[in-house]
Image 1 (cartoon, rainbow, N blue to C red):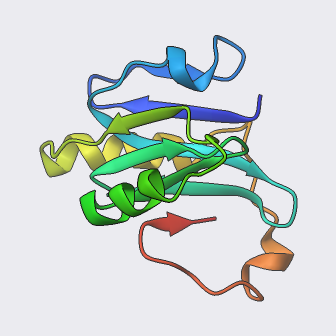
Image 2 (cartoon, one colour):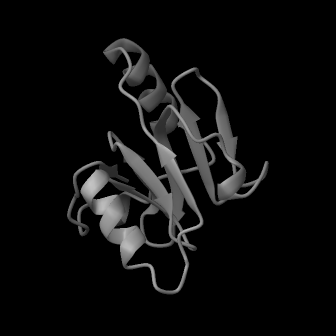
Image 3 (cartoon, one colour):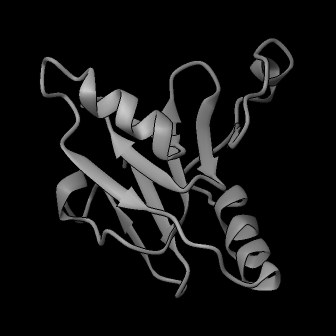
Length: 121
């Protein structure tokens, strides 16, 4: 499994089920992605998520437009929308994602990589 998407209704969709463009498009809360250095990346709290041909990324509307307009090679094949939900529901979903046994964190590298907004490892 290369990635997994968690939705606001509690469902998930992962790379073993289908391709990025086959995933449901709305109510994305968290996306887990395998990472060779850190073991995983966790994308959350973004308005938009897109598949760049290799991995998922998060963006606000301006960042998404920038990526789409500058995607000369056509690598972006899927765009999904995040959604604001109740804090307690979101926190429960994020906790499940953080504890997902299929996406273990490489703790040794966590200290060497700077954190970015909306991306955890």
